[in-house]
Structure formats: structure tokens, C-alpha cells
Amino acid sequence: MVKVEFLGPINKEPIEVDIKSLNELSTILKNDEVLSKWLENCAVAVNDTMVISKDISLEDGDRVSLLPPVCGG
Image (cartoon, rainbow, N blue to C red; front, side, top):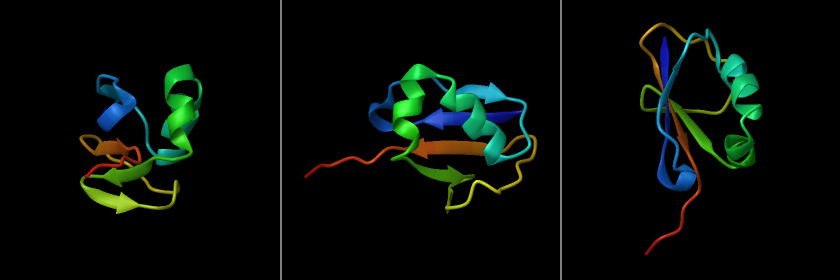
């Protein structure tokens, strides 16, 4: 299982999903009305390492974090 965290203003509890890649996760999250609007703008980290490609393989125990853009001062 892969733990998925939604940081900042996304305001959603973490979930655990049985997936093998970020492409699979993207497909799942696009079906969630609340999350789909965030997907285009979020940065993604796998085990605290920023990634750009969705062609990332995931292993049992990995952690994916969705980081929305934020402003602050």
C-alpha cells in the first residue's frame, strides 16, 4: 500500500491505495471532484523527493505527497 498525503489547503485526510505507479494514482485522483481541481497545480513528492514525471514506480510503503502552490509572507 502507498500512503498519499494532501498538504496545505487541499484539506483532505491521507489515504492508502494499492498502486504501482504515479500514473495509477493520477487516474484515481482525477475521479475525485475535490482533488481533480488541484492536480494541475500541485507539486508531487515521493518519499520526500520532488518528482516531475508520472512515470515513477511505487513500492509498498512509499509515501506520496501532493503539495499545492501557496503564498505567504
